Length: 331
Image 1 (cartoon, rainbow, N blue to C red):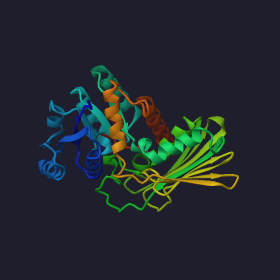
Image 2 (cartoon, rainbow, N blue to C red):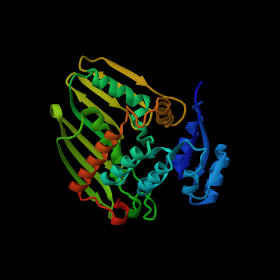
Image 3 (cartoon, rainbow, N blue to C red):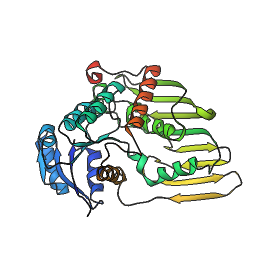
């Protein structure tokens, strides 16, 4: 008999709407409760998705005995404190990326999860979507020979609002943590941790990085050229160059998309991965599978991988001069 899980969502913003919609695609998932610091927003969200309960505080949701798993969809600066709250109340946690503002915060999150015997995973949803899974499979099985070069970008012209999240340093704004995390994650999955890192950023008048350029040198002489920007349009494309061909994750590669395998002999294979939903159902499915198996972390995107990722992001920040107010970095 399939076990069904009651999900709670903290932070009913735009990404939470997509996640809630995709939960409906999973027969063993039920959106049980939503929590917001604004009770009216929680009520509206609950009415829209048929959620059984809604709360005007995160604490009420975290202490509800009916909740099995909590998806944390608040801004970056709250991921640490909100995750700690849920973990201490023995709720399984799926926390949006970046999982924390820095490595120090994430270490405390891992220690808390271990102490209370609770599942924790970073919601880096791209790792679980079919197009990325296929790209990783083809690259690692040698379909393009030895990987030589990885090119990946994520950039767009964001509406300029200094009170909004993207350009506000007090909300953890900037291109690196919001979208640059995707190319960095992809590079680590395909080529492992960098041996050397070079990074340069340009800055908005608010102090956040409006663009960030990164160059990684990795094992087996692999080079990754990565770029993120909130102030320029881009391909949002990934190219993985090998000794025998090329893999191209096409536009908006971080979501379910299509993939081309272009071999040096002139032949091409095209893979299309249009699926129902936005693509968030795959990470939710992984969480429930892990819980079914009694696991406290994912074997696909483990806590060690999240720790590697946040550590590399810290390195990039240090080299590029990206900093935030002390109060949001504090452990």
